[in-house]
Image 1 (cartoon, helix red, strand yellow):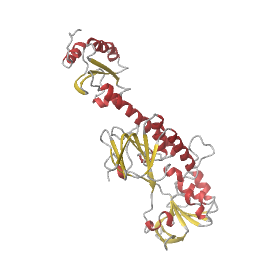
Image 2 (cartoon, one colour):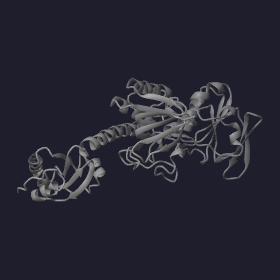
Image 3 (tube, one colour):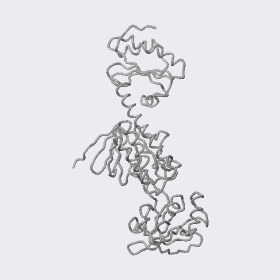
Image 4 (cartoon, rainbow, N blue to C red):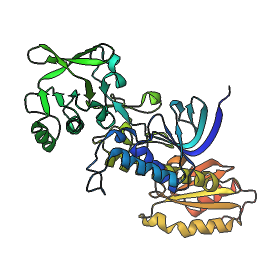
Length: 418
């Protein structure tokens, strides 16, 4: 069966904080915007019981509650949502292609905001107990189901300790496996001190997961002591893993530049180095991955996508117009000689009696337009076009030279005056 094709200005892949923020910006700019999310709108942020470091919420806010607000705001600006999985992408051409199981989406720009997923220990038999069989990655989701039970938390970072303390509100006992020496954790000091003082939390220091066991459902986590090598079987009702995340970038491998850890490289404008393709949020190679930084990334990506579309339309319809011979003058507003030539360029356009269309580009404000022309950002560079194609280029040309070149292109040459 032939797939249905839908056309959009912007397709955003991923519905976490960065993708939703990009969607808000694109929707507000009245771009026809589609957001594709394969599982849960809001991403991993929805699994966080309480977010206390996002500006504007001095009493804290639940991750799910915050993401619902993001989604509501995006929908207010007309953003469309599709819950489906992206199977392949083609990003190099002018029209980007994003393919799902049932539909092929064509877009002028693509924003990759696919986020990440919880990292697993890869200990023996772990796959037998993932998710609904005893191993969980979301305290908010599964805490109530563990009321009065014994649970294990693997990890000692901020998420592990904070979620572990949340679990103590429900569980009878929370056992934490920590790879470090006694008293040392990867979380912030406030969380560490609170955890050590929590009577429901106990710690297995210098340990890592060796294997998981149970009869259909997890009942034992076997921990290996990193100093002695001894294996201890710890009886639990369930286990929560908080040992970091991995980026959801498999579908983009070979399509964009990535680090060894499979995070996507971008510049400060969130561009991946392919015209019209941007990445934001936890898929980026960057230092800090938080809701606040994801929002900043998404804002930049959304603005960049809007600017790219506007500049593309300007470039095609105005700069490379086909109605007249084009005279494109690139200048520097801070360079006096090139700035002083503007009146001369306007005079030349007038002399040719409607046969020539002058476009002026500031090399700083219009850098991306210069890039499209292949300009090396030299002040006083002039391009000559015909039928939407560059026919000739010159650097620091005088009036006579410019008019002589134009006379070779126009239907009715004019007298060269200096």
